Length: 163
Image (cartoon, rainbow, N blue to C red; front, top):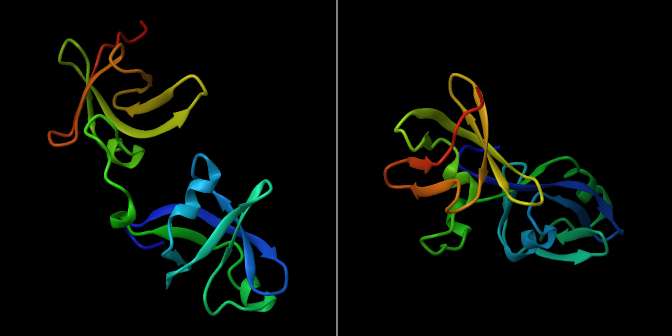
């Protein structure tokens, strides 16, 4: 996958005989992938992609992929978009990708490390911070996460490490 692209899913199987494919979506909810019309699959740009939720999966059709054998050639390839396709968010919202790499500083101005990744727990998202040790910090504003500055590259948290 090209650097800078945002991976949204992968082609998981074919659907029918006219070139439609099943897509395993990484977006939440899964049908959010259907918002985007220009997909990069296997390094190739497909414009005007038709996609929709179909039962418990997402199906898609790419111009020029009009039969089952052409669709099979796409199996296992990642689906990505250019970052410019993401909608702008209000100032108090962030894409996870924007938080990765930010420095995390606690209420005592101690650097805990940098955000390596995030994951969902159902109750809230969790920052995986890597420094001297790995620290898991719930992304709960304003109780735990006091501020996020994308400009400064800093997340300030109220966090006491376990002894």
